[in-house]
Length: 110
Image 1 (tube, helix red, strand yellow):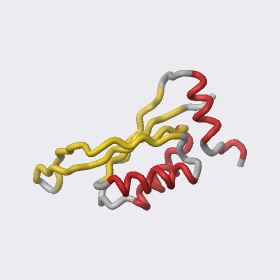
Image 2 (cartoon, rainbow, N blue to C red):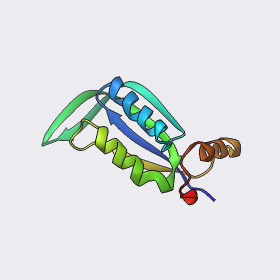
Image 3 (cartoon, helix red, strand yellow):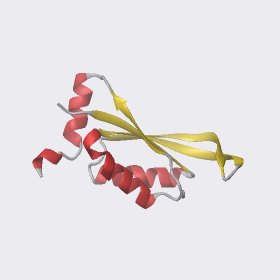
């Protein structure tokens, strides 16, 4: 049985978010990427509270692909320390999860 995750990352532009999404999809590392923005982020950076306009990507994939997803995001990202976090999908609509599995790379077939 497959384990599914949702990976989140934020970018400083819609164009960068779309570039990351498209590359993940082209490489079959994600079945779906949703982009929301602009959002307002506030965070600590080098002992100062910063504010930024960002776009957030919600990336649906299988847990076994996380390392490749992270590597691709890091290779394209403009941030020195990008937010890349993963949340488990503990349950979901069976047909959606079956679709997700069918659209992403199957490591067992290598």
